[in-house]
Length: 378
Ligand SMILES: *Cc1c(COP(=O)(O)O)cnc(C)c1O
Image 1 (cartoon, rainbow, N blue to C red):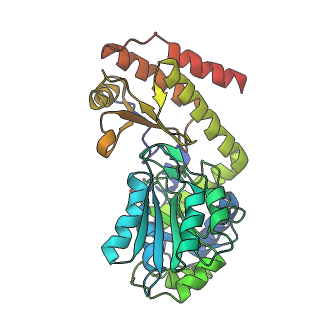
Image 2: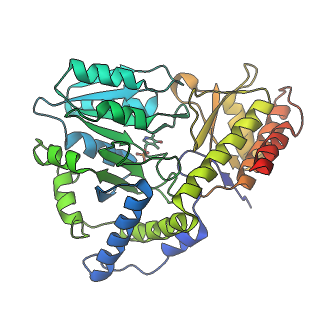
Image 3: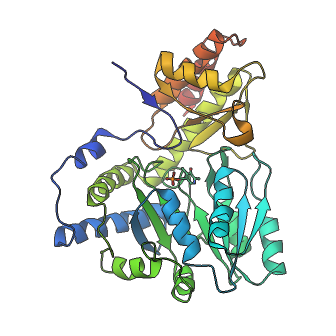
């Protein structure tokens, strides 16, 4: 028997109600029943993202919607500007490169946030930039970027702002219309409390105009086709209707709690996780730490992969290690979606026990105590 606690930044824990929704009999998608479902999901997504844009639901992992946001926008002399502060930011530039699109890649030191002033400078210097590609939560470093400020730099230019909100959206605060986001990309398996398999793209009117006139190198991921169908709560190809039904369930739960309360819960979980790690003498890697995931810098003496293995083997707590040059150096603990204070307490308790077992000098229960203090104040 293994009762596991999944604290990775995707996939994340899925509530039983959502799992149950997927166990219902399969139904046909060219029906009024499906249209009603897609319409409900669309309206709920618009509300939780504060968006008046149109919503496209794709059967893909999050990266599918990232690719769609490149191939439906760039080309024909239109250039991209990608803000790359980690593995996922780099993906924007990599997608552009894979299709041969021109892209100015702004390299940001891992752990630091994107600088909105740089965005304003680059846009002023190069009028052929049609789209700025940013990341809400850079999951590889635990940084939450200031999308509102980046949006201010893009507003008033002809460029659109495309945001990878795959890990953050639905947990970290994001206000699509007010912050000037034009395309928001989301994946189902992160803060939306869903299994992997759905990718969402929320598209503003400004982005839609750009898409309609683009030299779209896409067939399955043709966003114009998908947007035209979405206007009638439909899809060009077979939707993953089982997952869409599960999404309706998870969105009812999110709206039942209230999106502002969901944001506040994530901020609180993050604060407790940081307090716990700091009580063990460890630093937080991100300069602007995210509400949905915490990257913890490990002491020199600790091998990160041995720590992750021990956490999984002995305590059944699954967290993520570092990627690329951060491999073995950081631990990434997610607190996104279906996550409560008790999950954070359990994860911190396992962390301090595992660290002690690996020989780190940690005060027993210090992390749990610090996290409890945060929850007690709330
Ligand atoms: C998880 C993640 C992705 C990748 O999504 P897939 O669903 O694996 O395609 C992209 N960007 C960010 C910020 C992520 O956290």
